[in-house]
Image (cartoon, rainbow, N blue to C red; front, top):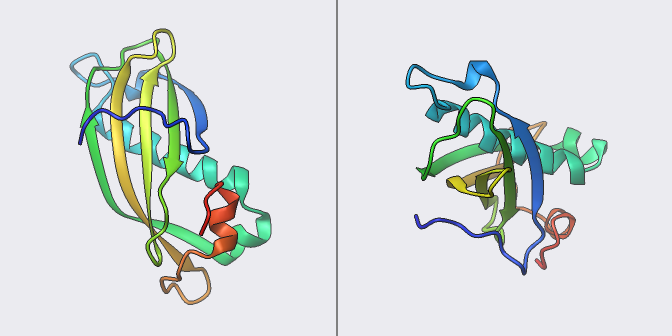
Length: 141
């Protein structure tokens, strides 16, 4: 996957996250597993910012795939900005992109493309992403 750039034609959600001591590994930079956590945190924060309580009770998202590229290390004391946007849904699946940058210089630290699946909370079965959900994120269905 190539380095991502924040699109100008999509709605983008941003979350600022401080690097804390527990994020740092033996090599004195943010551990790769932390980036996966940040990808999930920004995805859930985006969903929570858009979906009503009723929608969040009715629908759940689960990850099917994470694809992450690491470009530069995040270091102790850094603050990062996680930017995320979504692609058009494909049935119950939806790709989400995340660009993680250091806030001080906007250097790209990591980029990710993740595939999520929408589930009905009651049955646990996949459900097609509706026009209502797409519209929440500024997409035409």
